[in-house]
Image (cartoon, rainbow, N blue to C red):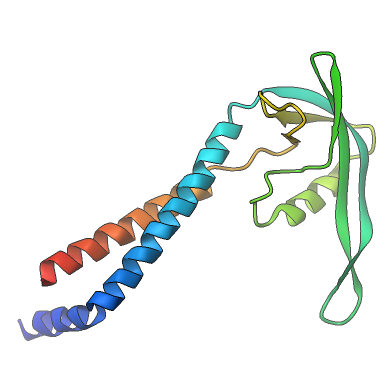
Length: 162
């Protein structure tokens, strides 16, 4: 019984009003962030798909340097695709908010030759906005669940201690 009392008093110290407010704010902010990402990723699943052709797929020396001072290389991807009677060119590999987009593009570029056909997913209301790899929704869904769980946990602990 004393272990439970000690644990509850430790939790009550952790969940003082300022700590609770900070924890709830972080959970709500995270929930909003991941809901927005999930919405964008889920919408991309419904983007129409067309066939595109690779114009450029190469690694070019960039302007950034590594910790040892050597220049880093940047992935360069350019492709063309047709929607209706219009032909577009794009260089977007995936949605701009994907954190490891440069790494994914590098892996893609090393496997794809120039003039190869690639699937292109384009925005139905703005066909000039296109990607080769739609944004994955799974990570955003997990992030939403974790933030929602933390919010419910914080609220539950706060209400049980008041």
